[in-house]
Length: 259
Length: 133
Image (cartoon, rainbow over all chains, first blue to last red; front, side, top):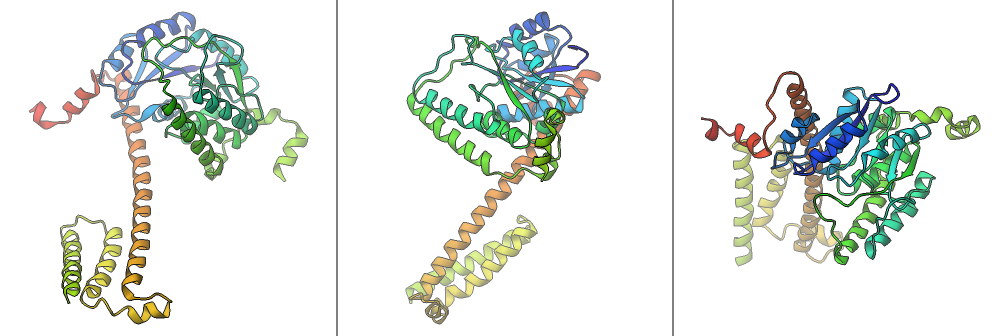
């Protein structure tokens, strides 16, 4: 519980038995009363057992569904168990749980809060085609979401209740869909997106790829995902889910939106 | 006449294969109908490749063979598109099932001491009767 609200931190984990104990211990120390759910995405190591041993709730997917699949499951879990706030956090330790309260505080004015690098805090640097891709994405997505977004592929996010319900029913599971398309979909359905600056830590396990060929492919795929996200029709029952922030909108704009 | 021999044999073989799959209930009805229709059209064309010549000429196509080639190409395109659509749908369905399984396993692990599989390999082994027997 934080301010009387039930909070769940979802950690999608694929073969993260090594890094999990550290991040789980950190969450328990810094954020007492917050539940964690480790979504074991078809790991072949001890991920699930380690997570359970460290006092986390555990869900084991029968086979690997990818980060997007694990996250959609996480939101379904949060919705089913009636959590007020759900956060997404990487299990490899690059997201610092100390930022969780600032993400949650920002939920007062938004439905979806992104913990963003490049927004003033931290030392994280990316160069070459990958950085161009990230810049392009941030420009386009900022325009769609009508707010400044500097780190669109961040896996550090917080959602309020309507956003959880939305993502539990509609969450893109393909590559990059879980970051880019999910944001576009939320923005197109009227959800308010904001970011807060966070510093990312070096991953405790695994290394990021830096090859220019891979980065170029990444750029192409990101463009495709963006294009698809813009032209895909949102199902009616998904559009019916109302953002919590809509009530706060100016009456004049609301009227204009309905006509 | 060599051409007619090859095409007629192919036509008959295709039709026989489709019928056999149907007979063994390996094809669902919705696919069966379309393949049966294709087989029934293709088989006679094998024996008389020239029967479409007049139709082709009316459509402005030089020979019946070209018409068959064109129609076949369009048909295969549509069939593969349909299969992509089916595969997407099936993937979405199995994904939902996998999530439901995980949801129930999580509930049972929390409230009823359902064992947490040490790794996915164990879970796979547990369902393999060869290992548990």
